[in-house]
Length: 161
Image (tube, rainbow, N blue to C red; front, side):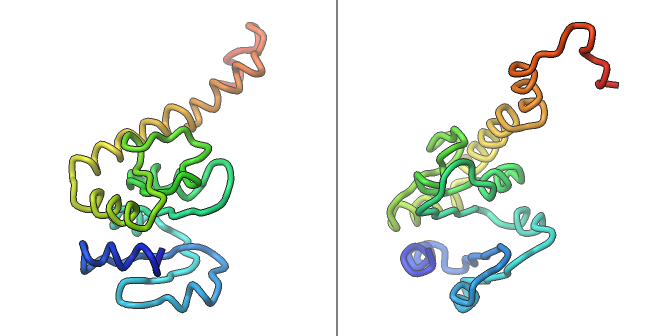
């Protein structure tokens, strides 16, 4: 991202800062620190960053299943730009819940679009949050569990109080 995509983003958004948050950050990532890159490492409370940032990027090239970082971003209402790999496992639709890009140019363009296009930003934020609530909330999980392990009529509601 820093070598191939960020320079293209900086062309469109000269004052952008890319924060890197995560535990056990290797020296190779820490050494990327610059005017446009802040490797922060582990942050106990990420809320201030999710609340103050405009776009969440997940330029993932490998992995499987749901990506927790993408779900967390969506839960904070922060729209996502990710790759095909990053979008796997959550049922997210390009242009409806997030923006999908697999080349440096397309990724940079998607970041710029989300950064500048307020209507797109609000639509993706709302749609993705609704998708998360519909499919991955506690209520959605409870419905799935109830469908898999139905309780007898006499037992239902006992633990609800």
